[in-house]
Amino acid sequence: MRIVSGTALAADSGRHRRLAPCRSLIATPRFSLDNALVPPSVIGLVIALIARRYDTQQPVRLGIDLGVIQTLEALPADADLPEDLPWVAPGLIDLQVNGYDGISFNSPALTPDQVRQVSLAMDLHGVTWYCPTVTTAPWEILAHAMTTIAHAIRTLPEVADRVAGIHLEGPYLSPEDGPRGAHPAAYIHPPDWDHFQRLQQLADGRIRMLTLAPEYDNAPAFIRRAVQKGVLVAIGHTNANSQQIRAAVDAGARMSTHLGNGAHRQLPRHPNYLWDQLAEDRLVASLIVDGHHLPPEVVKTFLRAKGPSRCILISDITSMAGKPPGTYHSDNSGEIEILEDGRMVIAGQRHLLAGAALPITAGIANVLRYTEHDFQTAVDMASVGPASLIGIEPGRLQVGAPADLTLLRWPADPAGSIQVVATIAGGRLIAGRIPGDSPP
Ligand SMILES: [Zn+2]
Image 1 (tube, helix red, strand yellow):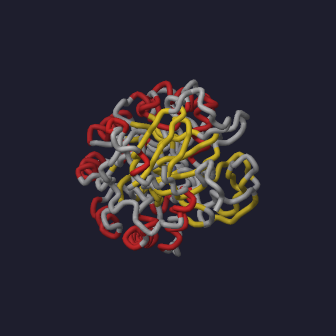
Image 2 (cartoon, helix red, strand yellow):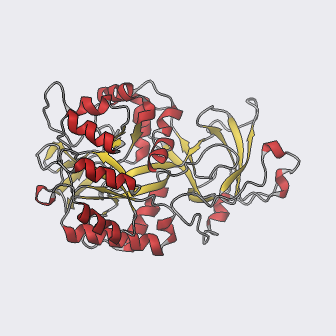
Image 3 (cartoon, rainbow, N blue to C red):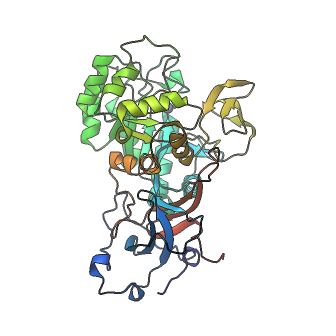
């Protein structure tokens, strides 16, 4: 079999892996196991790898070319395989990324190249699609973010290949302390269709997700219009009552943003907006399961209440993610500290979280620690689940499916973190190394 190593191929990465956010241009597979008359050796696979399926645990040999899985062969359980065979799973999808390594999408000085840097950093965490997330800010900053991200998508293939759409979180949120979280009250205001349309125009129509608080009188009409335009509307940073939440969902809201965070410190025991959203089967909840934003018992209870198919993981990482432990200055939060355990806190006030700093893989590991759910379920919450919400085709382990995959290792040590061995997107190795390949 002619195998060009994934590592060697990484140099040949000039070709765009896709031309549009929706994977509508997937090539027709030229070979499948059903069509076994054509041996794999004539295909010229550009990546071949052996790994264990994340769903069935079956060891498989995968061949990838033209952006899709061309061959998928089950290997016998008694095959002579390495002990530490990695898991192969769909590429991860993170719908809430505020920045990385000192770069914030809310920065007044954001440049297209910085958008590229954050996009490339996602590769290291197994993320093959993500949503740059812009939060409540004065008009000039929102406008600058939309213009810059849209320009980056238009001109930089590395960005176009990774950005599933922009997530606008705010400014149509609750102004109350508690639900508004760190969103500056001065710039929070009711939903305003003209305001949103102007931002959407600057963004080239790339705003694909909008988090809002539905307690404003005009919220249902606004949500209806946004949904008609193809925007995924999420409820978040809200102080809505039961009727207002129901009206928002009737109007087409389909998600709860980081349920359990961006909330009052104390709530009436019932009814309250947590029960309302938990009980509403038409809402999928995104959860920050970084070990700090939600206690394990809450994660377990939320997952039981909604079921894993109605929960997805997000990282919600900020510009301080990717930095080693230490004290830093943040434009949004002032002096902040990143602790050894990954917690990001206000300097000198370690009980106050200043945002999230751990990648979405930390959420997968914590779901496994906190709940009875298995590896497939946890990974699906960070891949297949978000893909279906936002309307993109996820990587899948079947012939003809987009080769958006991640190879993962999870050390036997329960305190250990998930390691990303390699990330493959659009059929190309974009991070790490295919095990068995010789280093470059
Ligand atoms: Zn938030």
